[in-house]
Image (cartoon, rainbow, N blue to C red; front, side, top):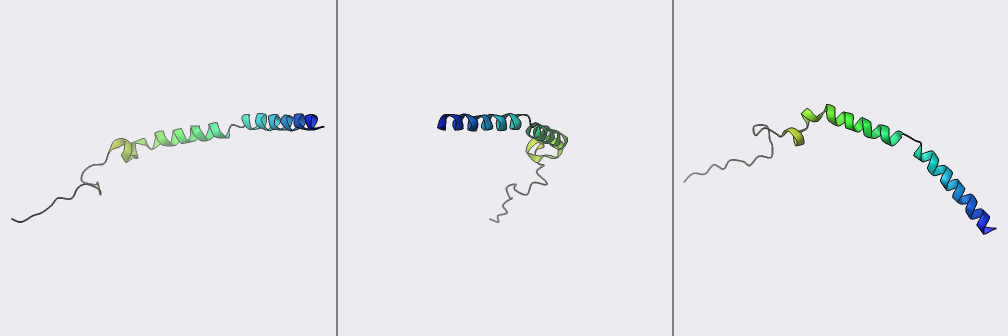
Length: 66
């Protein structure tokens, strides 16, 4: 009996995997993410860089009197 129940369980697993493989959500999400990235690439400071005048993390100038 355990052999036939094991086969039935494996058939259910295969059926579920086939169902999940046919779903296109991941492909659509990846396409949407790629499109979003390409549309906003010109505003991304990691890609275009930050001008030194607007960079809040630039090294501060040290003013010292001798």
